[in-house]
Amino acid sequence: MEKKNYKPRLIDNLVEAYLKTFGALCIEGPKWCGKTWTSSFHCNSEIMIGNPEGNFQNRQLAELSPSLVLEGDIPRLIDEWQEVPQLWDAVRYKVDQTGEKGQFILTGSATPNHKGILHSGAGRIAKLRMRPMSLYESGGSSGSVSLQDVCKGKIEPKVLGEVDLRQIIDFIIRGGWPANQETDLKQAAYLPIQYINAVLDDDVYRIDNVKRNRRKMELLLRSLARNEATTVTNKKLKNDMKEIDDEDVDVETVASYLDIFKRLFLTDNQKPYDTKLRSSVRVKQAEKRHLSDPSLAAALLRATPEMLLGDLNTLGFLFESLCERDLKIYAETFGAELYHYQDYNNNEMDAVISLPDGSWCGFEIKLGANQIDAAAENLLKIKEEIRKEGGKEPASLCVICGLSNAAYKRPDGVLVVPITALKN
Image (cartoon, rainbow, N blue to C red; front, side, top):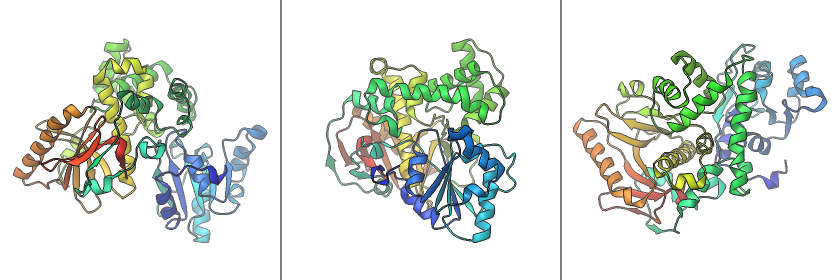
């Protein structure tokens, strides 16, 4: 690709930092999120293992002589390395031999099983998770408010432009796919559908050459879409499939399919958080379910803009998913992690950002500005309960809003930020 045409991604700085630290870097993530574009931008030579030219001659060459395809100017890109798992050990061995930093970038849209891989690559090959574009990267956010500042309780009051509900719906249906940003919305809606079909028709089998029931996998994906941004259990997913789609599966099958979706980076769940590091809440509470982009959930629900305008409850869950995708992307650029909070008294915060210094910040996500007061009240209530129990209080509290036209600090100390103004 022409490097001058490259659209910068927030992960770029992390890629550069990792190349200076490790012998090789593996960038993982869902198909079509931009892994190859970004990796190619940072490399001086490349080989595409999945290239079909010459009857897949690159893959054949890699299978016959893995070390041969490693030859080239460094950093060297090895795209879709999981097609030939032996490449992992070949890269690890080459890194050990030379001791140089930043020799290779491997990209993969699936995590293979360990067959054919003898060494983990620990200390030699670092891993980075890449996601679809955030609103700031795609141009949907002005970037006038820094999440890092918000986590420190700092905000400069700003009056921003009005946001239309249809614009939010556009962001959801279009998704964060780089190739989908300049197309008409009607055409953009086709890409997530084709993504799902490609995964079910091809990738699910190729990951381990096991044939699975396509219909059941698709119905499970639909159930995940219906339960997007919730902590639904595997058993409830099973029951949901039975009740809505009249398809009965056992819980073990649901678990095995979910593992496949995870290995294909089709899901990107949000782990639970508790203010006490050794609390059982971290392990006993469920993860919040997410597909890797809200556009996938919208596609599985067959949601059109008109349908979402008429179903604000569903739109609210998809909006929450959009925001949590972006919060995760932004937070990871400064070493923070995204969680959700749910205690045994059923107190919930939509999102928690845990910072490297041990401090944390609580977030509520609301589509309409009329919900800000109730959201702020909930955040303050949970903060007070944590204080009474001797837990670590949040460094800041914030309401992320869809239709607010201003960023500001309320008299009670809670920050309010439109998602269309946020960046890392």
